[in-house]
Length: 602
Ligand code: ADP
Ligand code: MG
Image (cartoon, rainbow, N blue to C red; front, top):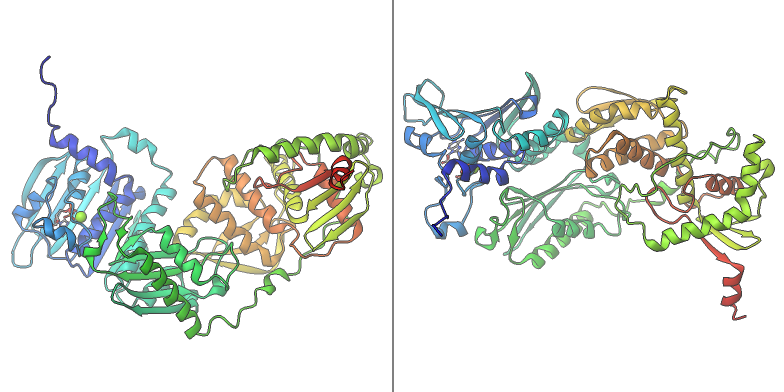
């Protein structure tokens, strides 16, 4: 057999590398901006068209490149940032792999204009699919301008995989902000489709955060500072009372490089453990400085994951630094978490019309990936057979004669337990209902059902007007998410409009949602949307229904009257899937007379 192994041509090797480094326009933005920072620029402009599909341009006033370097920079493994192997353990620059420009040039049309301070004249290079098409002297300022057109023009799979412009632009904004937060000493601007989207003047970190996330952040930020022999920690945390049910703003930087680290995130959450409830997230902008020899940023092509020695120590240092700041700035004692539970909500509606007919929803739909276990499903079966016997007969009867359910369904005496459960007796045993989850199930099916009516044109989206319109101030990323969700939100009864920079004004909410809950509900909708991916229209509607139901449902601790509890039970058993909450958790527990007898040893 003849020899078959061959070396890959550079252009193919580069395309393969590009597959790892450049996943979407935002990855190119990150690489180009990082190059500008490594070149010591003090001003960086990012210009984008069609979310980077047709044009991405980064212009900096950094040190620029000589003619030879300009040609070299597109070669694979061409870097000015490493000289020998030992440099690998002392990386202070963002880049060092010498891959980004070679990768980008292999999958796009790239123009480079660059000039070093000492030179009179700069260099222009046009490169396409790794082949230099043109190189000539040009007039330009000191610094570098790189223009990337038609990204993925020769990688249709990648191009087709891109999401909507809004989604891709949101990713670009995310990268832009990460770089901008890490470098408040640098001025940045961002233009999209001819509009200035962001202008960030050089200044302090506090100023940078406020310019990005809004003036409202000023009073929320608590400084963190700790200097140890292992790590220096600086930055800000958000005050606990501003923690959100949504992830919010969470930024870790190691040596000014944005990283994701669930482990360190945990350290932060742990520092807040007694101050916020479990389902809340704190905001933070934390900078760690460590000896570059002690970290390895080379474990992931996009360098957002970092391995470091002393991980455990760093964990405890962060935790105690944050705790100390919370104490020092007197943040802890003023908290009153009871407040949240005592928000007044409307009583469970008594005057509602005839029970809605049973609708089809997907029982396996599960936005929070809490697996529905076999046991719960078995529970559901059991429930169905039980209520076939006990209650459903009554309900069906009431529906066929079109009378309000309460007239016909046998009503069992209910007892509220611990403000959270409803205990009821039935001829075959006893039944324990999880009040809030049950209500969520009812609302969820009702919301989806009403939505179907609207979609069939049988009903218009109803919205209750707020007495005092509320402002929803969002991070730029969330602002983009809300824009994507706007048609679905409006159909669900939210009456909201853009109102200045990154702000929406809420004029009306879906009926049943109290004023105080509007913003919470919107935030959890945005969050679910962000963390479960874009998904189909149905997915979005279901997510909205889940969030709305959870925000509208009776709060734990709410005392219910006898007729309210009975109504809740009836409504629950009219649901298509009464035994599961919209997120797949059990809504009820039963115990048959046989089981009871067994328990008593008879
Ligand atoms: P790396 O950043 O890993 O070195 P890149 O492919 O991103 O690899 O860049 C290759 C080289 O091109 C860099 O090492 C640097 O010398 C040069 N370069 C890239 N962008 C710029 C820029 N904006 N200003 C000056 N030099 C640059
Ligand atoms: Mg680079």
